[in-house]
Length: 526
Image (cartoon, rainbow, N blue to C red; front, top):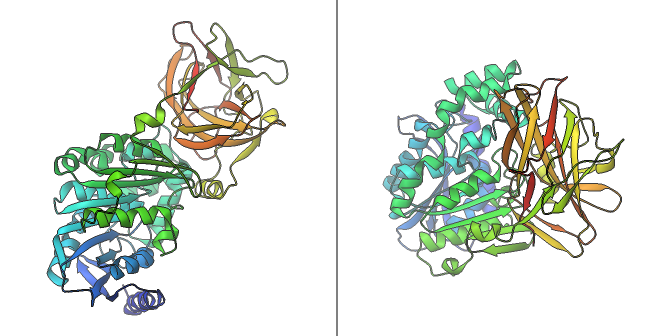
C-alpha cells in the first residue's frame, strides 16, 4: 500500500466530514489497525469531541466487497456527531487492508474482534455498548462476528446474506451474472485467497456451476445461519434490511434467518437491488433504512426509549415512502390465495388459466433451452430500475410458447396488494436428466404488457428422463399493487441469461397436474 493513497483517503475523509453539518464535534483519523494476526487494516476512526467524557457506544463497520473504508463515511460522521465512536475499516484483502480475501472466512471474522480490541484500547468506547453494521459483505461479516463475539450487543445487517448456499446456489441454480460480478470486482480491488482463486479460475473458463459447487462445502461455516443458536442465547438485537430484487442475496434466505431469531429483531424489505436501497444512506443522504439503523443502535446501545420496541418487527415497502407493517412473517403470509393451473389451450399461442379451485389430468409440453421474452433482467441494473419505478417488462402475447408455458388469471375487480412469498407446486416430466426451469410472476395490463413482480429458478440434476417430478417451488418475496383490471400471469421457461442453464437443447419438459398433487400457485394477495 503506497503512502500517497493512504494520505488521499485521510484527506477525502476530512473533506467529506467537514462538509457535513454536525450536531456534535468529533475527531477523525486514518489508522492502520492490526487484524487478529497483526495484518494491518485501513480504517477511519471517528471519536466524539466536546460531547462529554464518555464512554461512548462503539459501532464497527466492515466495508463491503471491493469497497474501501470510505463507503460509510457519510453515515459514520452522523453517528460520531451523535455520540458514537465509529470505526469504518476496509475488509481483509481489499484496497488498503493487508491479507487475502477469504470470503468471510475465520480470519476476516476475527478481524472484527481485533478492531473492537483496538477501539477499546485507543478510544473512549464503552465495552458494554458495542454494535456492528455493514452493507453486503460487511453485513454478513457483522452477523458472523456477533455470533462469535459476545461483546457485540446489536447488529444492523443490510443487503447481506444469511445462507451462502441458498444465495449462490438457489434451488441448485447459479446466478452467473452475480458470481461473475463478485469475482471480477474481487480481482480488480483485492488479493484473492485460495477459495476465491479457485472460483476465479473456473469462472474464467465459463464453469460457473463448478465454481460454486466447489465452494459449497465451505458455505455453512461462512453463513450467519450457522450462528443462530449463539445469537439467540445472548439475545443479540438484529436488524436486517434487504431488497426484494437483490440479485446477489435474494430475500427468502434472509426471511428464513429472521424467522429463527428469538431476540429483538426487525426486518425491512425495500424495492431495489443489491445495496441500492442503502448506499445513499451510507453516504449520509436521507434514507429510511439507515434512519431505522440509527434508531436501532440508539435503543440497543444507548438504551434510549425511542419507540423502537413498539414498532412492527416486519416492514415491507411496495414503493418508496410506503411501508406495510406486520408483527411477524407468518402474518405476512396469512390469507394466501390458491390458484389452480388449468390446461394450456390454443393452437398458435397455448395459454392456461390461473383459476379458483384446481384442474387435473392435463399435459402441456415445451422445448428446452429456447429463448423467450420472459426474463429476470440484469443483476443490479434491473433491480435498481425497478426500485425507481421502471420494472422489467415484457409482452405476454409475444412470449414464445414453443419454449414457455403460460397461465393467465382473471382481471382483478379491485386494487389488490401482493405482499409476501408466492409459491408454486407443479409436476414436470423432463426428457433429460438435467434441466433448468425459470418461473416468472407478472402483472399484465389489458393489452398484454406485463411487469415482472418476482421470479425464481429451479434446476433438476440427476432426474430420471420420462419420470414425473413434483416441485415445491418458492418464488422470492415481493410487494406490489395489482391495479383493477390487471391480471396475474405465470410463465415458466428453461432459459434465462442471468443464470447458468443445466438444460441441453433438443429436450422437452411436460407440465401436468395429477389428481393427488394438482399444480397450483399460492399468492399472498389481499
